[in-house]
Image 1 (tube, rainbow, N blue to C red):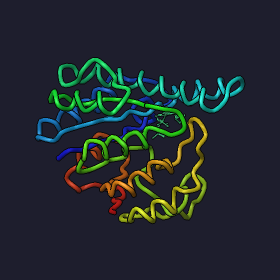
Image 2: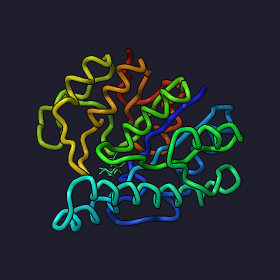
Image 3: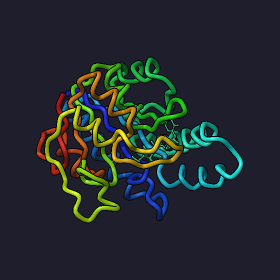
Image 4: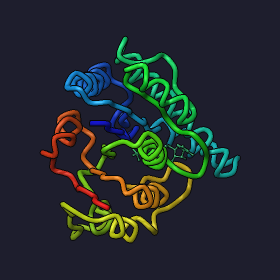
Length: 225
Ligand code: UTP
């Protein structure tokens, strides 16, 4: 299967900072999927590094400048994952989808970060999945699925096992567009998922769930066109 993963920077690079073991466990999961015969692309988020830099820069700069800082953080996190993937990756982070596809055609695991201001790596992963005609998009993040309302502020929020892309649009439509924002799926990504009719799964970004998401045996939310 041709699978694109959006790997939240907050899971790869948590508040406590980078850990060799954590990065290695993600690299092992992606290598295992490649060994199983899947074509694997990973779009890495900026995580805490992005948020720290953006919160200081916002005192001085506009949102798109802050986004540019966030993009650099996504590329630094990408380099970290690339370092752990060794010969299964290329030691370069592509900045557009054409260059990304060249890496996939070299039979390597593709790792990339952000592209342009005003969206997040969720939107990058959805566009990449559309561009390469992927079979599946997996959003591996710091929540375990899509809820009917934000579970961080609503104790009665309910996790949804299955939704369609129109329902996803309704749920994510009001998410913030500001630099460093962290809705479960960015509103632009939801629109791309809908237009490209992408089968999408949102799972907790732990290596076990990343592997299970491809077999369909996961605990997250499945989004169908
Ligand atoms: P992300 O929001 O994608 O990373 O990028 P994240 O926070 O690690 O993802 P999650 O929430 O854990 O899933 C960090 C910031 O970088 C900028 C945005 O400001 C974004 O909030 N960015 C990233 C862009 O402007 N364009 C991009 O293509 C990617």
